[in-house]
Structures are given as structure tokens and as C-alpha cells.
Length: 95
Image (cartoon, rainbow, N blue to C red; front, side, top):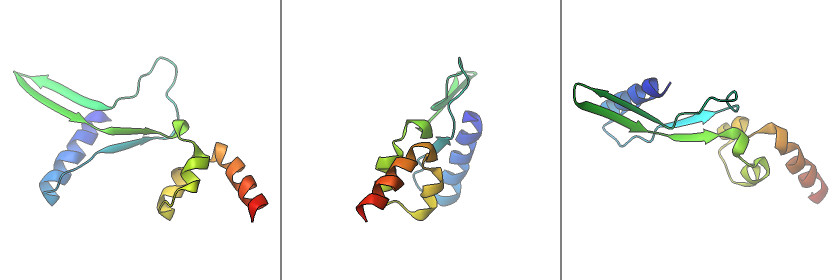
């Protein structure tokens, strides 16, 4: 996945001629013993390719805080629903 993301970022830089900030949204925690990547690094014949990317781990985001923000509607499906129930319960009491 990191190599593919590096390729997508390079193609976007080339096509749009703009700075690119690659972001990965991890939906679930990895299995035990697996570490999630936040960069791609390759060395071949003395040449080095390196691409850092922002890794968002949804299970680490507080859904109550995320839902309280003024986020675009398209982002809402990515807010963790397992802790959002408390937000909606509290909102119903205050309205």
C-alpha cells in the first residue's frame, strides 16, 4: 500500500503541478504484531525514493469531538460510530 500511495502522489503532482499531501485513512486496527506504515522508502543502485504520508487511525479519533466540529457532510461516514452514540444521546437531551 505505501508504494501505491507514493505512485498516486507522484501522478497527482505531475498532473496538477501542485503540492500534494498524501493521506491514508485506516478504518480498523491492524492484527496483533502488524505495524501500520506512515512512509514509503526505497533504495536502488544508490538512488533513494521516500514519501511520507499522514496516517489517520479512525479508532483513535474521539467521535464526540469529531461530530462537534463543523465538518463537511462527506466526512461524516468516516467518523467512528461506536463512540458516536454518546454524542447523539447528549444532543437529544439538550435540544
